[in-house]
Image (cartoon, rainbow, N blue to C red; front, side, top):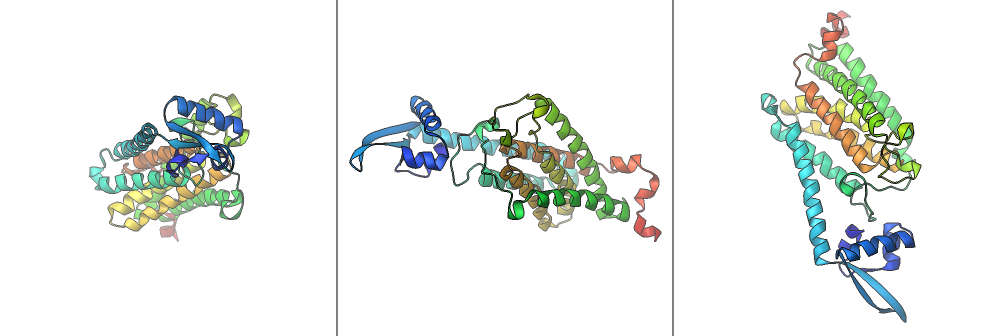
Length: 306
């Protein structure tokens, strides 16, 4: 709501603000009352079209609080980047890693947290809000499932065919480690937090719902981030900055899950952070865990046997 008012310096009457926020009269009135009592919104009562009209504007204090909130979100991104970049000097990709982490989180926040309609945010960080359902075009559920299966097939076939001795094959084995570890962790977190999905209509603050909640974190975004991170880190360290385009995979999947009301914004960010952290761990292992477990032939690769 404050986001919407910030973009309308002259203020907004109740009707247009209601349409922009997508709230009912009662919900909007309740939010405005809280904001007015907190002195975050100024209320100007006058007349328009021959009848009384009330206009709502962000107060100077409200504008300051909004900027402070943006600064907090920015610090969250920087802290995540710093955590992931720890000890990365050994691979020479600390600066690249930080810029990539910040880029993904910044783009995601811009696309999902500051959309064309304001939100009465809730959940983690106060950014969670429901999107209008969309299962058409590139956002069809079948497209995301094909991407998920394609990623699993690519890393499995690529790892077995090329082998761990091949640089790209080594990256695929690291991705297998990352995908497996992060997927197990994501599923465990789903059971622990059992958060209700947007499609269940309970709002973003319904946690610990038992088996009925599987929203936090997004398992598919976790998988995509876990898959691309080892490849990105290894290739970026070799001087291939174009490889950062792979971050479009978790970004696309995250937006798709929001459009299908399967996850909240913080679910997607948590899944991406989990997959990225797992990928960072896998990328810094000299010998992938899966290679150590499987027979020694996987180091050679099937391509050298034919």
